[in-house]
Picture 1 (cartoon, rainbow, N blue to C red):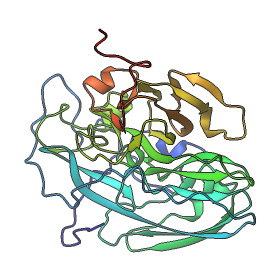
Picture 2 (tube, rainbow, N blue to C red):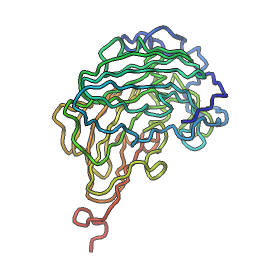
Picture 3 (cartoon, helix red, strand yellow):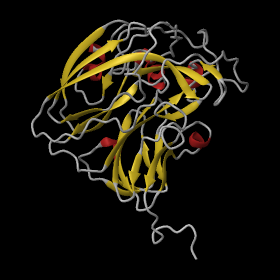
Picture 4 (cartoon, rainbow, N blue to C red):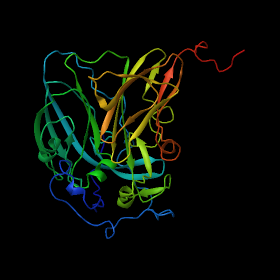
Length: 364
């Protein structure tokens, strides 16, 4: 993904008291400024004075939900090489609204890593030299100090390498875990690692990968201009946007029509919630989840025919669906003000022949 390396940006690094005290979640020491004295715009009833929207470093920050490694067919463990590069990028949340995101590999969510129980992951993390923040990565699939966070802390221009074995199956979150980890996650630094069971997963026609997070800014939802991060709004858990894949209404026929399937086909959805604060009431409008593996626990018995499944911040879900009729299946957080007013929506475009025995919009 192209990255403009000619411009350095100074990001606000004010902290929220207590962030560095989250045992097992943060490493090192960092800014501990009080939000009352830091240069942060507090959320008010009046729109903030915003600067003009900035030139973007990338045209698209939203990860392609179909860009997923292929299912694993081998029967023996292997070593999986993974490279994560942390990139701080200006991109549009929606038209005319820019924000400085923090990402793994220039996308939100970060790339889905696919492994099998018993595999060894050989991870290299690199902090781009034009960044201004330290970064690291905490894998919920890792048995190790801070999920690997303590040994992956990189300053701009640095790289570090660790190896770890994945020993239990499921879909797990990874995220940045430096002090001010909530800021880094909110700005986009999270993704999912899938650990398949030794026998693999059942075959499906399509797989899709999505991630939800909240964005806290000094502007109002839809207010044109460049939005800065707002620590006070985050502390009060009052987001400006609640987003799927980092942009407002990005995934679907309305913008990037990546998720397309035919009637009768099956799709498996891998969905992670970075948060940092809000859980998702994950619901497919116009359909139902045929199978749900709560918390990504793929070895558990699935819940069947589920209308809405809760996904906690820092957790994930694996869910499958199909449709016998063509329609847009709208994937939403059923806390519906987040859809109507905060930008949360992704759409699966189901195409095919009508079946009036299932659904008839114009009965005789």
